[in-house]
Image 1 (cartoon, rainbow, N blue to C red):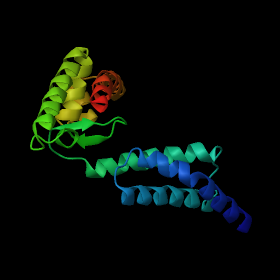
Image 2 (image 1 turned 90 degrees about the horizontal axis):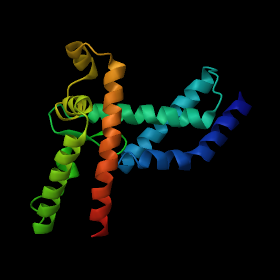
Image 3 (image 1 turned 180 degrees about the vertical axis):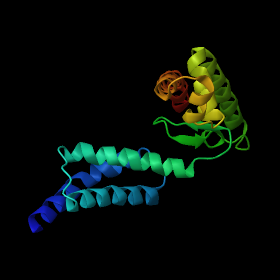
Length: 182
């Protein structure tokens, strides 16, 4: 058991920086990052104590981290419309993502431009993808609810949403890059 504890401690020491950076890119608050890192390592220790077989520890850790990040954002998920997916598909309020209109004329212009680009990007989506994206992201409806209403499989709805997010990401990345250059 002592040798196993040493291996777990060594794995934690080796993987902590990469895992912390991985989580930090997805979670803005440093305290939350540290909490999530600790949760992931808790799962590792728990798995070793229960003698669960883990073939690729590094991959397993990042998989657990993704799940913990998803759980973290689900807990903080707003119940009202006006949500949007960030680059990792996690939820953030649209208002938080836009420059404040009170921050002066440049911010107001940037806000207006971003809203126009968002509308244009939504309009460019195929209708099936647009409908799922709007229903889930902006109206806050669940995939279960959408599946029951439409008669489509949840996997179909998830795929449509995934493709919509990918297209929106590519489309809006150009605007983001252009604004960073200014």
